[in-house]
Image 1 (cartoon, rainbow, N blue to C red):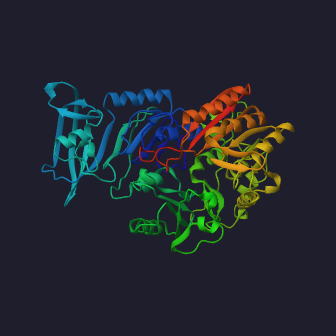
Image 2: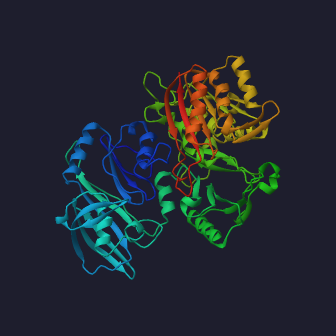
Image 3: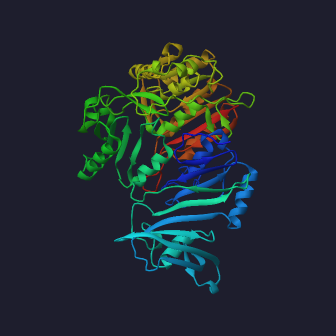
Length: 574
C-alpha cells in the first residue's frame, strides 16, 4: 500500500520501504544523544508507522539525494543483501571547477584511511578495493558536471577518486575542492529490486546545485502549504554569525546585536522576493531586557509594508496571532514547532504516544490546507470544524478526554494544539495580557476558549493550590523562561531551580501521566538538566516509565559555531 504524506522530502513509501531526497546539511543519523537529529531520527520519530525504520545506506552530511530505509525485517534483509552484492545500482552527480579532458573514466584503487579522510593507493598495495566510473554530462567555463557510478560502496570513494583524478568536487575542501556553500555531490538515482515483489524500482531525485542550500534543507522538511512560520537563517550554522532571520507569515523578522549590514539587507530583499512577502523588520538584541520599554524593544520596519498591529501565521495548519508591537517577543517561539506538533498529533516519538488506550492510538485529523487562499475563519471549513472543533469525545481526536496543564503558558501555543487534538486545557501564566492573547489564538482556530481554563497568577503558587485541591492532569507542560520573578515566589532561575519546579508539578500528574519539560537556557547542559528532573521525580517516589529527548527543530541546525541551546524531555511517569 502506498501512503500520502506531508513530508516534502519523501519520494516514495509503501508497506516495505521509504525513499527520500535527503537535503545537504543534514546527517543521515544523529552524531550523539544530545546533538541535532539526523534525517533518520527525525523521520523515525515523526510518524507511528515509521517507528521501525532501519538504515540501509548512508550519505555524508553535505551530500544530498536518494536515501532509502526499510520498514520491516524482511525488507531490511533483502535491501541489505542487495547493497552487499552490489546489485543495487547508484548514480551520483557532482560538480567540479576543474576541467576533465576525457569524457569517460574508470578509476580502480585501494582505499586507505588517513585520520579523518581516505586516500587512493595502487591496487597492489593492499587496502579496500574501490571502483568508480565517471562520465561528463556537460561543461561551461569553470564548471564541469559529471555522473559518477560507484561499482563498489566504500566510504568517501567518489570524493577520493574525483580528487585522485584531478577534478575534486566543488566545496569538498577535505579532498582538495574549492571552498563553496556546500559539497556539490548528489545521489541522483538508485535502482533496486522491491523487497516484496522483486520488481526493479528506480528512484530519482532532481538537484539544483545553484540553489541556496539553506532554503533547500528547510523546504525538504517543512510543508510550506501548511507552515509559513520558521527560521531562515540560524546564525553561524547558516554562515551568518550573530544573525537570526525568521519568517512569520507575510513578514520577515531579523535579529542581531547590530544594525543591518548592506549584505544582510540584500539577503532580506532576496527572501522577500522569493516568497512574495509584504515587509521586513529588524530587532536589535539587548541583554538589558527588563530595563527596556516595549517600544524600544520592538522590531522596526526596514523594508516593504508596515505590519498590522496583529496578524496571523500558520504552523502545521494551526493559526497563531502575532505582533511586532509588543516588545521583545512577537507571540510565538518557532523553536517549539515540533513539540507543538506532538500535541497536535498525540505522537511523541517511536513507541511513545501521549495516550495509550489498549495499545491503539487514534490519528489526528489533518488540518485543512489553505494553498494560497485567504483565511476566512473557522466557518470556512465547517466539516473539519464539526469533526474536531468543540467535541472532546470524538474518536478522531488523539487527546480526546485528556486534561493538559500548560504552565508558563505565554500565548498558549501548546494549549491550542492540545485543544485542537481534543484535550481540555488549563493555561497558567503570570501575565493576564498573554492569556488574553492565548484566547484569541483559540478563537483563530475555531476553538471555544470558554470550554478551557485560563489562570492568571504565579505558577508555583497555583501548583500548590491545584495539588491541595487534588487536581490531576494527564499531561503537565513545564517550559519556563530562563529567569522570572514574582511577589509570591521570588526569583526563579532555570539553571538551579528547574528541579524545584518539577517537584511542585509531579503531584499533579495522573498515574502514567506525561511530563513535558523544556528550556532554552544555553548554559544549562543536557546532563544537568536531566539530572535535576530525574532527581525530583525519584524524590517524589515516582518512576519514569518512558522518555524521549527531543532536540531543536531541523531549521535550527546545530554546529560547533552554533551549539545547541534548546533541551526538551518527554517523560511518562508512573
